[in-house]
Length: 126
Image 1 (cartoon, rainbow, N blue to C red):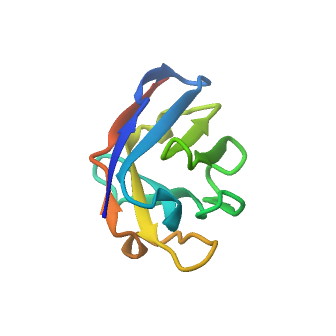
Image 2: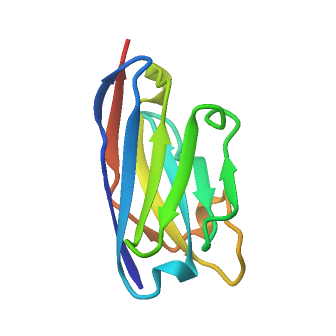
Image 3: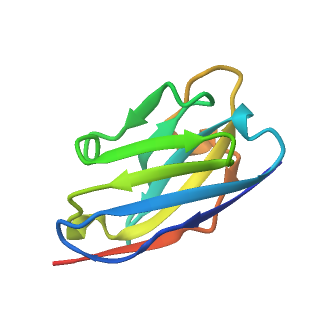
């Protein structure tokens, strides 16, 4: 089992940047694929990006792939999401999630993830 906690959210002006962190506690962090999802008010939770166990394979939603970078440091049990060029439409609660993975890949589907953090609020002002 793994516990996840997100940090790094906050209020930023349009065009600004944020780096979110997802810190994990528990065993065998490197056995988990990690995904980031976001949920805006009144909308369903949606996929943002994901990274495989090794960090070699990364996946992005089309809406963020030119402005976001996901990375992980398995020695620190942490995954990072660097977001640049933020716009008000990016305002949401951002969640990280972990999926037990038997291969070096990650899923974009919510149902694939077993463990979720409580989320961190990102607010982009215009």
